[in-house]
Image 1 (cartoon, rainbow, N blue to C red):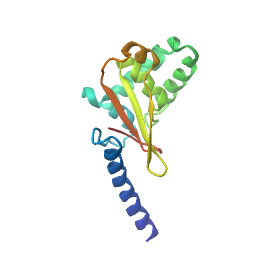
Image 2 (spheres, rainbow, N blue to C red; image 1 turned 90 degrees about the vertical axis):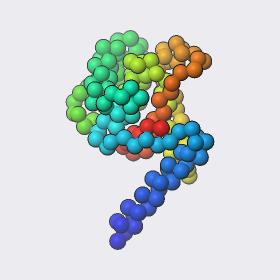
Image 3 (cartoon, rainbow, N blue to C red; image 1 turned 90 degrees about the horizontal axis):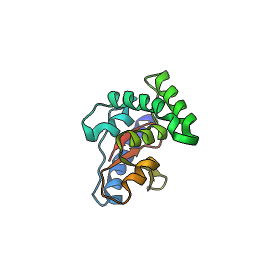
Length: 155
């Protein structure tokens, strides 16, 4: 019985997340669920272009390796992310993959997540070169939602 109650609580909590997102972003952003297939980050990143997540994943993996030498002090981090994503198709991408995608596609990317007590936090994950290039000009922003555990969706 406790498991059933626990699951019901989780469902209510997820519904509240969607409501909190609507309120926090004044109705400008809403949650778009991505498949939970170990490529959720890449599905979310590629959604705006209509590309499938697995193709975006492969492109990011290649780019992590080919562009690593240009990343200064982050070269090793990019190579480690490349090796991690290459090692198993079920390994999830994270911050480094997001930043690499930003540079690869020249896109602004914001990451949002819930931090206890209903507080929504945001962090700019745009590669510094892209941020400089785009400056203050109006441009598309990819808004990612991280559940704080193991899944990315799109806002």
